[in-house]
Amino acid sequence: MEKNIGIALDQAVPGHDTIPLSPYYFWPRKDAWEELKELLESKPWISQKQMIILLNQATDIINLWQQSGGNLS
Image (cartoon, rainbow, N blue to C red; front, top):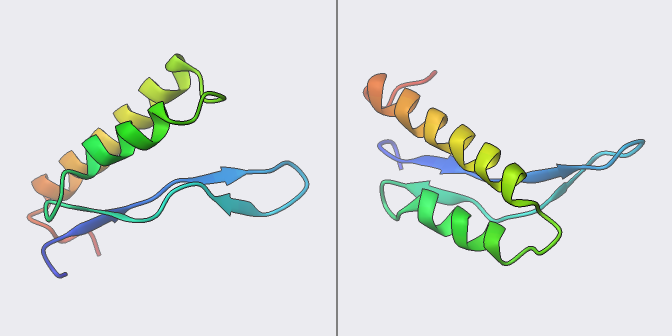
């Protein structure tokens, strides 16, 4: 696990806490970006624009993790 990064989505509910929207997807053990994309595509209430924003954020996190050599602590 030391050389993997976990990515998960939570949904913020105004006036409440957050609700888990996805399980953790671990990259590079699996293609976390592709798994996240499939999950988002299965949620008809997530707009295409929001899906692109979320996937771009996941890409940024993965790239940052790679550039750090897997050490973001």
